[in-house]
Structure formats: structure tokens, C-alpha cells
Length: 136
Image 1: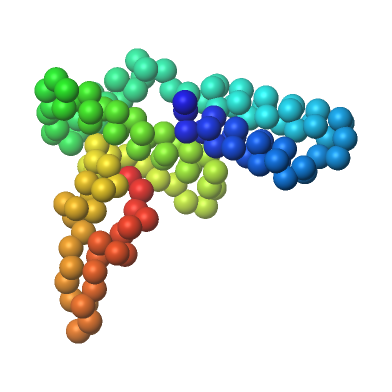
Image 2 (image 1 turned 90 degrees about the vertical axis):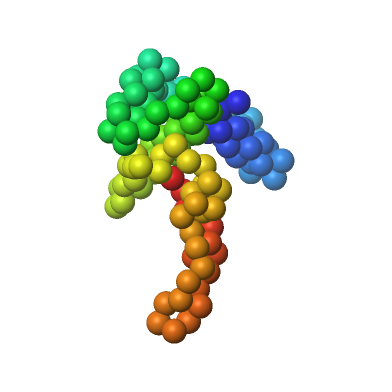
């Protein structure tokens, strides 16, 4: 199930479970909001062909090559990161995210490869801790 759809289902069921509606009219409004949210999620999905083109141009730009199963795995990670970027950008007007050379890495891979302990201003810092919430 698409992450967005799952999130919306959880939101709707939490309203129902916590009885945020008092009558049939409130429940009807909640259902209409739910349907509109679901339609919005499905209408904003990027077609597979466009994702493949984007993946190919991203790999060329960043000089990345993968074969077979590794290409499929990295593509899935790339798509997941791209969807998070799109969702963030849709929800935030003040700041925007974009694809970068790390877009084929999971957050865990990014932390393990690029976050390290070191010193800053005489203090020991643990960059792995400071980057635990980094999204690609």
C-alpha cells in the first residue's frame, strides 16, 4: 500500500476511534474528506515510464551504473526518496528538497557511509547522531 494512502487511512480511523464526529452529517463530511485525500494521492502518482526516464537521466548525471538486481534495488530506493521529496515540497512552501548524488541511498546507508565521529571546536561530536533524521 502506498505510504500516503496508509497515512490517510490511519488518520481517518483515528478520528472514528476517538469519536471526532457527533452525528451522521459529521461522518459524511469525514468520508468526503477521506475520498478527496485518496483521489489526491492517486492523481499525484508519477507514471512508471516517467520515473524510469528520470532514473536514467539521474544515473547519467551522477555517473552511476548498476546491473540487474542492484539496479532494481537502487531504482526502488530512488523512487522512495523521490516520493518523499515530492511530498515534502508539496507540504512546504518555504523550503524545497531536490534530488542529489545521494538519492539512490537509504537514510541508513547515507548515515553509515557519510556520517562520522570527529571533533568540532575542541568538542567531540557524533555526526551519526546529528544526522539521524536526515532524509534523502
